[in-house]
Amino acid sequence: MDDAPLVIGGVELRSRLLLGSGGFTRLDRFEAALAASGAEIVTVALRRVEQAPNGLYEAIERGGARVLPNTAGCYGARDAVQTARLAREAFETDWVKLEVIGDRRTLLPDAVELVRAAEELVADGFVVLPYTTDDPVLARRLEDVGCAAVMPLGSPIGSGLGIRNPHAIALVREAVSVPVVLDAGIGTASDAALAMELGCDAVLAATAISRARQPETMARALRLAVEAGRAAAVAGRIPRLHHAQASTDDAGLPDLSTAP
Amino acid sequence: MRVTLNGRTCELDEGASVRAAVVAAGAGDAERGVAVALDGTIVPRSAWDVTTVAAEARIEVLRATAGG
Image (cartoon, each protein chain N blue to C red):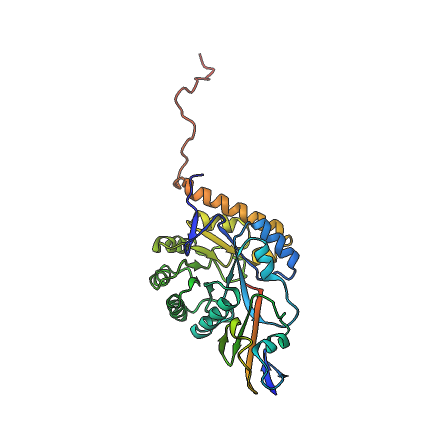
């Protein structure tokens, strides 16, 4: 397939599936899913040390992937910025998946605080990948302040509702020139394929994999779906028509009438 | 002396270093992927030995956890 590699923050990526580690409770399952997903980027959260080392950070490195710390659970720009700085210290990366949540029930982003935090982190040298709504105007604002990508949601985090507004996602893709990573809402393979068909550059999935009955198998399914959707997007879908259009030419049709 | 370590009241020796607090929190001494905030300010790993913790300090010791 004639396709350019995905480049985020100057880093060339072969895989267009990003893996979220959220929801995994067993390290062996996570490692198997990481291998099956082919992901080169894995998100992690930063939380209080409460028990013996969990080995997650090392497992990601063993799997050959890059750690993408998130700011999950942050409800304002100040908290998110401070969490990003702590993550930079912990993981020696200036990449951050910026989440600034505005509502506990829906976990939807707080647009105003998100732009504020993004601006501050970009100024501080971070490669910022903001989790955002499917709003093309907000996406452009985030690009304007220097974000390396935008990550619009398909539907609320962990809902598995898929892409509720495909038109909006397509508009986000048109609105910005940085990579668009569909984040949140993926429930199964067809959702990931649709995201790519809509023009997204990559897909991030966590719950869809970690909470599947067979996480490793779902990781493989999403990898294949992302590849298929990307290939379809590059190939170009045919236009939708209201009526049939014969794919077989009428020319050369024999006369099979029995009348003399 | 009494400090608040990861939200819990905890006893540390007078003049304890940030590294001592990291170990008290349960992180491995050489564990990678750990970050510390002392009274809301980030303490880089390179300063863990030379930064002392004062009584009543609030220390957060953080590591990578499955997420998002």
